[in-house]
Image (cartoon, rainbow, N blue to C red; front, side, top):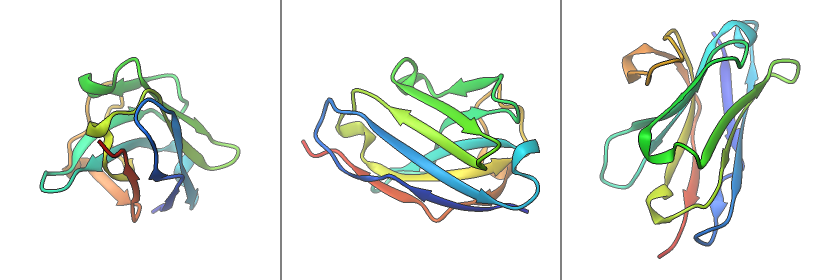
Length: 125
């Protein structure tokens, strides 16, 4: 099993960029599909983006396509989410996840094997 710790969240103005990081420990990171989820206040946790073990396949929720980029560095055991042109809808706690799902499709939460503790992103109106 992999242990995950997110960082990089914060309070940012609309229109700016932010990069989240997820540091992983454990032997399985480099062979695991990984994903980012988010949970806004009063809403269910939703899928944001996924990437396969090599970084060669990705998928995104429609609302972030073209603005968010998921990537990974297996040598550094780190997952990233670059978020551009942030808007108020991005306000949420963002979670890193190790999954056993095909990264070419949105990952259902029940296919997550490990969750991080989350990092808060706030974009005030």
